[in-house]
Image 1 (cartoon, rainbow, N blue to C red):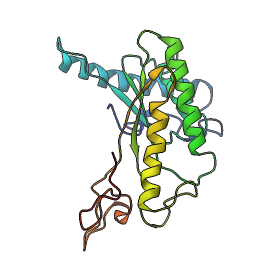
Image 2: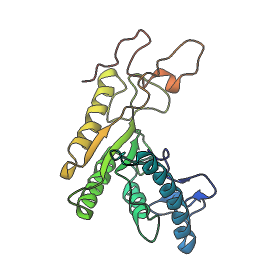
Image 3: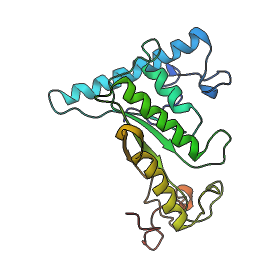
Length: 223
């Protein structure tokens, strides 16, 4: 994975994309005109340099799969916008990678939904296949989690904040990846399953999104 959640670029200010842009599909990702194009070109140059480093380490050995990473896979149109621009010859011009990685944290934010996650990734899968039917880029969900107990700011009405709700979120998201067109889904990762609450420490999400309780029991046992 080259960078983490690079939706706004990396190594600011050299690799910033659209920090001060106007509203649109990409929201705060957009610059206007030549400034926007230059920002993608700069960011693409950084990614290409990083990927070149991976290929140098790879040498004559087996190909090392490279993933690009963005957040908000459930924001309407965002994954298509990002990967369309980053691979465009006149914009990012980044092509020597293997996996389009997105993150998904369920929320009630406007413009985001589980349905958008599914439609976004389905569109990406069809685009990947059309571009290269013999070896399309794969799609991977690099981060997701869901609370098994009530915690401020977490959880949506689609799944209850219970062990069963946590399990169902993971199953539903897994099924989206498994059922993408052209067998384009590569896999899914649960973020920070071992974030068990411990006395005297501020644990991520108070331990509410761990897959294990403070007694070590699975919350729930996923198979």
